Length: 594
Image (tube, rainbow, N blue to C red; front, side, top):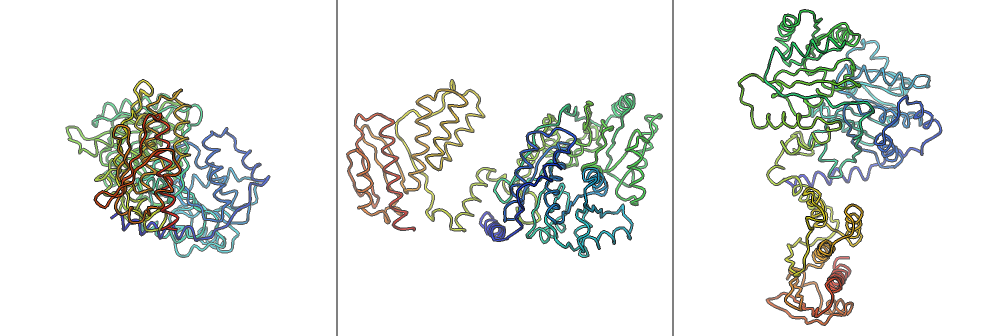
């Protein structure tokens, strides 16, 4: 499976590398002025992400960047800066969103933000009449519409852009596979920015493998509180109390009930439960006009409770709604639950979310894990962690096909990523064509991270992983610098551990099979396949670069070099071994592979 995926990935990489997009010039004075008009103080992450995106746009290679930022963390503002950069250059920008309500909200935000600027902004969604839609489509074709916001209506065959420069996709995981295929056609040579609070495992994984670039906004805006989250059995008393408490402070409540055929009955139950509450109903099978009117009434405060399906899941921004009930939450996906919770707590008020399931019901293991994860990750900025947990619960799926969960769990994420990147490198002919060998290293030195130096197990494991993946001398020095920066003077055991990591790396490249110390001698045995290519002259030349006495033998068709370390200091003889192996490797690569 990994091999097949590697083939598809290579095709994708090659296509991306060879495609030529449009390279935008650096920021103009107009761009700076537009950014200064932002009425709030940007967070550091917002500024950094905007910078990364604009840098990508200035390259000739088409951008494909994923911007992960929690609900309400200012992703839209970052997207608007990119849109401005595109349209000021005479290009068109398209903003693709999953729901009609969200399209309407983005349209209003853009109209406000681009007020007084000479750009025509269009909207394509069910809320528009046929005549309005046709006018917008004509404008897109002729180039008189500079920015268009739309639902999947934007992907219809009759929508042709005169000169599309930037495509912004909000919550890509909400589009079906077919829509994504149309998106791929549209994406071919334009810059693409995808916004999401919780990327589906596959999207996140593609970013980790470098198929996509990734920017993350983790800093919450000022005066935000985490949403108080409760997972519990369905309970009328708690629903009544929650709604009444919210009404007492002048707020509103969302009640998510995902069955359209009985949603009116559920609304009646709530009217009986809380007689003073004004209850509205919203779902996707209503006509555009009905839905728009209900949502507008709710925004204007004409209802206290909105009984709704998951249609409110993405992007609806109603700051006055700060209590949320979800019935049968165990049927929903992790990122969906997280998105729904993001509909409340968007102001400086404390918000409450209740994830309910049927009384006396035994939850499946996966449902339990999901609900536990949502409850666990309540602090601000958990979207990225939720996505990582989702990746762990259901695997990453097929990166390029329709399937969104896959076989990763059978090998573990790290190993899978490593296998895939190796397969990709092998097929692209990048790096070496050598087989990787497991090297046995026994140098009889103390090489570990003492508990007294780093007590936190997670940090310790993190450093062990980094040392295991050392890929150059600079890399080893960077790790040592980090040790010193974060934990102070480096103990000898840690220096030796890093040195062993570096020796392992050069030994792999030199096709060594084992490095063992026996008293005052270190014996380096080479892999038979490597030995065939390693000329005797090369070995002697490599030995001449170090001051140790040596003996060279052939044992069972394997080349073995015995190095006499005598009373040489540990650091010094370890250095000599590294230099010897590096010299062997250089010789082989230049002689045979180049």
